[in-house]
Length: 372
Image (cartoon, rainbow, N blue to C red):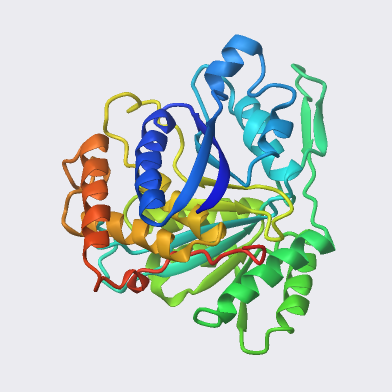
């Protein structure tokens, strides 16, 4: 039996509901695939901040480093500023553990109605540079409270940061549709974006089978609404990737189903898996939250840990339940969080009971890391 130590941070809002739902499914999958998933729970987040003045303890990163993966729910509360919640937990984890690749699948799921008129299937992998770019710590404010108060925020692109994101994206494109689109804004941002373009082009030359297109981000955003099915893999900077992936999730029907992986591809540090949706305090505690994004993130975690069959089993199960029209309210269904989870658990068991089921028909969107 293979053992994996996983840190679990349910976090805030609906994270407290969707994480337990996903863990139930992961535990069922683990039993069926002879895996020992050892979950350690940490009560960090906004409630912790209100009690202690920080989002996690001083040795929080040291505690997380003892695990192979981190399973995160959601972070954010009306009682805590976004700057405190994000920079006190998620961003330190991403940077301390060199999770420099963020992977966000954007895929049409049967049973989830897209707002687009077209029925063309969408299957995009968005690769986001995750450690630098527009989300740098360099900058500050001066003359606070005065009429000439000013703020400066520096964007930092390094050759290393851009190159490794481009290489990762190109390698994924090579194993998919062999088409890579690079999001840029080099017609208006004079230094950093031309630098990005140059390094992406250099990196992709090493993948002659991959066709590279550089597209201005405003046009790319429009095309993601008008013809998203024409894209395969998109690589983008930290900010642009964040925005484009949320847009992509919206055009497929619901941000509630969108997963993500924050990867340290070499496996030197734990990677983190989380849904794209936020803490949704407006529906927290009502049993309305969609657990698909969390479940799918769990499938991505299994894939990263080297268990593609277990990952496909889980993804096949929740996709099947969605296909039957048993989704939660945000995707047009009537199921509660617990009802949807019960249906997924039953489907997991049903799939395992039928030897002829080919789970590979619905592969998980993110491939295993080289360390797996």
